[in-house]
Image (cartoon, rainbow, N blue to C red; front, side):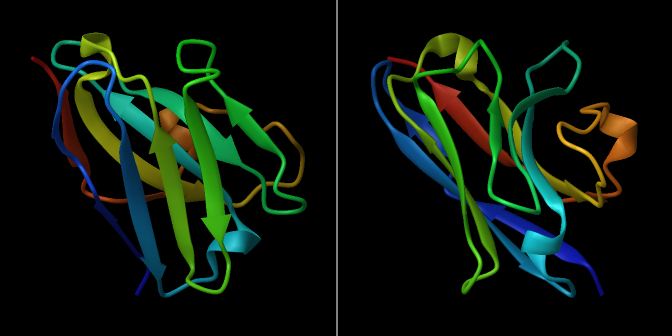
Length: 126
């Protein structure tokens, strides 16, 4: 059974840091493109960062570039999102997702990712 489980969310002050984890089971994460999405209240779900299946090439959205880093530990079958210099506008539910790809970069349409976690809440507030 394919499963993705996020953890590490919480309440943090502006300027703070958090590291999100996404543990995969039922499949090998590094054979898929693995991504972090987020969805703020009243907004559409958007891609934050993605790592390829082939050579760990990454994509990071402009809104978080220089602050967020995506990585993957193949031995632990786990995806990470290191978030630094957090801003109130980063407040959202963060989801991990995975999809098979044959080219890079893939489509980041939500519908193109077939495997999803249930999400973890990140709140940035003083």
